[in-house]
Image (cartoon, one colour):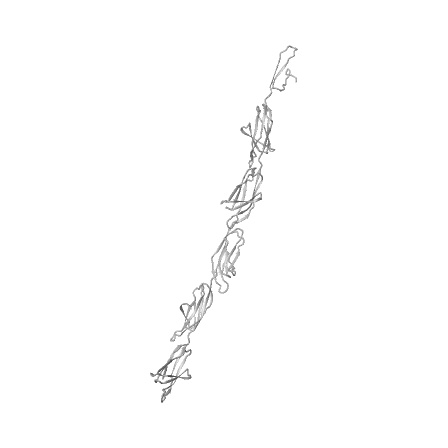
Length: 489
């Protein structure tokens, strides 16, 4: 009998060992030249075979003896063998479990049987992917940019050559992808000059945010466990921009990304206002109080620093005014504050005032003799406000006459020779200066004119030594003065 089946198989594989010889003879063989003989009977055509078990080591099948059986039992010792060489199955392991930042790559390493072809899958789906280990049994890949946690699973390892051994293998690497931190910036967009506000950063808890102010050197702030942080601007007087530049996480890996975003804090100027107006008015007159300042602002003021606060709205040109009531005493208009309205409503206290002095109206009276003789003159006197001009009429007709009182408030004139009753009527008086206060006046002086008395004398013609009567005729009750012979008393 002869034996055949020398071959090479993969570890864990089986093969067929065949015997050929004398039909129906019994062949004895050993495995690896040890242990009891194992018989196998050739069939009528002189053949027999068996399938080995799963082999994990090189195994030799040795012929020992053959016997015909029957009578006589012819037999002999045999030599010959079949060697089944067992090739080790290729192996491979995978490594590279790590944590990376979103968008980064990672290196996955394979170690195993030199020159083996390793198949793996990504996230247990899709077609198998191959990598061939080098002569030292190493290989690696660089992942693409990853945006989600990804698992690389070993599937099999295969070695080329005559046997082409392969086996399914297990093992995996998980690349954990940490999301990139994020952050935003927010804050009030408009504030009043001289006030401050809060700038708020919101984003990934525990992240560090880098920012700057108006392109100054950058600063950092750490977000708290809720993902927020804030800074106080302090009091601002000019527009200021807060720019967010970058956000980064602590630890390993240190994930970061460049950011864009800003908050422009517009600083609204504080409103201003001034007050102006006439300084002196005539008693009973009104005047205009004017305000100038920030367009559309509301100005608050007090009258004589008492009572309820009054308000006036400036127009789009920044002007406003009102007409006072009729004033009879000194009155002061004091600025209190000014406010812009809108959001924010900027305001500030103000100082400034207008004092309106009230000038008393001038007055005057008229006086003079009540009766004069025809053809005489008289003095008409005026008494009143010093330096005022008094206007009067004579007999309430003709052109108005004027007289200016002196520094003591008196004035007078001498009439022309009067021959009839004459009336001097006050018309008005004005103070002169600024303001020129005036008012209408009433009052008059009636100068009555008495006719001159007349008389005539008459007498008789008599004889020398006789007496005679001299007769006077004229104005009743008048006293006639006479001379005798134009001499004496």
